[in-house]
Image 1 (tube, rainbow, N blue to C red):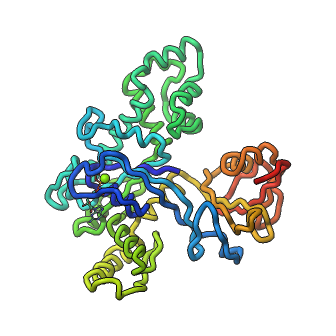
Image 2: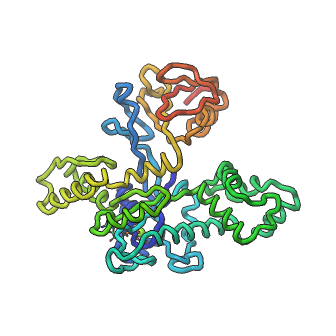
Image 3: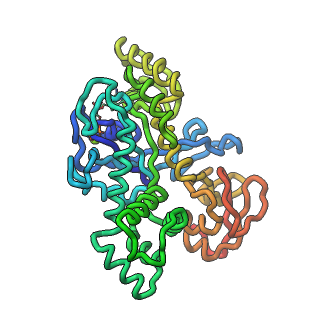
Length: 404
Ligand SMILES: Nc1nc2c(ncn2[C@@H]2O[C@H](COP(=O)(O)OP(=O)(O)OP(=O)(O)O)[C@@H](O)[C@H]2O)c(=O)[nH]1
Ligand SMILES: [Mg+2]
């Protein structure tokens, strides 16, 4: 699972990455601090099933802290994008190819309204971030059109028509390796009223519409109102929220960054996504730092129920991408794997996934090939290969193969 972080220069992309991943990417208040992409590992946070089953778990592929399961995901932070990047403005949009493997994009917006479209300082509160929402989506769609047309669209569609090939299959092949699934293409085709029998007749506008739709279904964008901590932010945020149809999440990447730093220094107890923290080692911090922490509590955690960083990650993976979490186990008495690790793995799974697909994609293809049935860990009922996985399912797989 890869989340791409996009936005104009200085909106706080690298700060978001550092806050979520404890990375050390360079951040600064001037545009184009980031040129080469930065990667990091983070996690979504869900209620673990261990509490429900009253067991102490010892996970392998994820972490469980106080009954909260943290399941790994990856983040990618790229250079800032400016209007007309596709015409090579700013750093152009070449670097976006790094994002082609992303499953979902988060658009980090400067909700303080203090930067123009190029990320340069302007009068605080004067910039309308709605402009950023619009231009960024446009640039991302243009980038996607490049990926699809690859400068030889005419030749590509003529071949399909002349040789009576399948547009779907040909496109799938063309886009292999950039996290575009067959279902994405089908959905884009269904949702548009375009003539798929006469691809050579498509206008430039048709091509852009198709690229935009395919982008929307295969790499949806979640809007993040970052820098919610500044004096102008709340008003601009409220205003933007009323103008937007899609979900927007208020966030202070900087507050999360500091909380995580204090937590790493063992000064506070804090888990990403919490809406409060406990100072456990007051001797290790200065009175000024204590004051800053109190401000974070009052102005951000209390007001927005957290810093927003974890909410963004969870929302991108679970809501925008419509995923659920499933826990396969080997032993249904103590919910462990063969080595006795209790609830060893938690997997992020697309909602609607069938049991056998899950086994094949996430566990082991041999186990899927020799799949006999599954057992529901709660009801002990047998589950067939077409059983549709539900959130928090605990499942044992019975197979004719020697399982790992
Ligand atoms: N007040 C406040 N400032 C923030 C927040 N997040 C980032 N900043 C500041 O915004 C400035 C830019 O942050 P970066 O993380 O470098 O921004 P970026 O989007 O990666 O910038 P480029 O790499 O240049 O595109 C820095 O001075 C950060 O400290 C936030 O939540 N609140
Ligand atoms: Mg950066």
